[in-house]
Length: 185
Image (tube, rainbow, N blue to C red; front, side, top):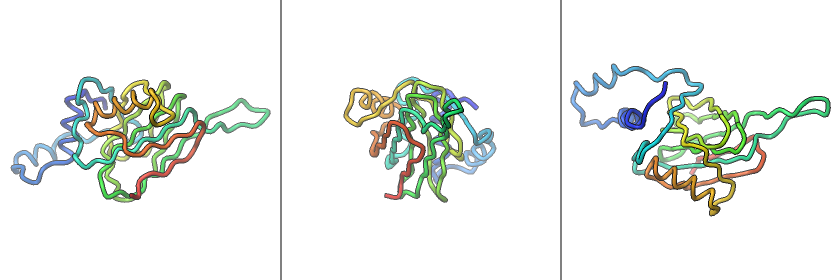
């Protein structure tokens, strides 16, 4: 299911509903359509503040690879494997930024009770995300960063800041990888 910027922001607000709402508002929220399959819900984000203000205390974690680890034998053409991201429990809700230069099949493994609000997918290829649970997977464009402090990182962080109102707090990057662990502050 694709959301425009306004629909995406409304969905995030619905997800973190205030307990001061009237019974009619809660009933309308509960009656709203459920989000589709868990494999890949992708929405293009544009416009200032598209994913705005998910939560004032949201943790923004970023993971970046140039390419997935290549799995091959001499007699076979090289094939990229998935990149696993193990998301440990965190004391704060989380937005996950996944950045890659090549097309990557991101596989998330969420710990119990992880409050993953959104996954921001960034890079040049047509990457996919599996295991995001109820978090919305959102494309933020072709921004790829390999090193914190680089011009590319500043571009990626500017886009994350534009979309969420938050900067990237933790950033992990490798050239060719297949496993990351994040969270557990």
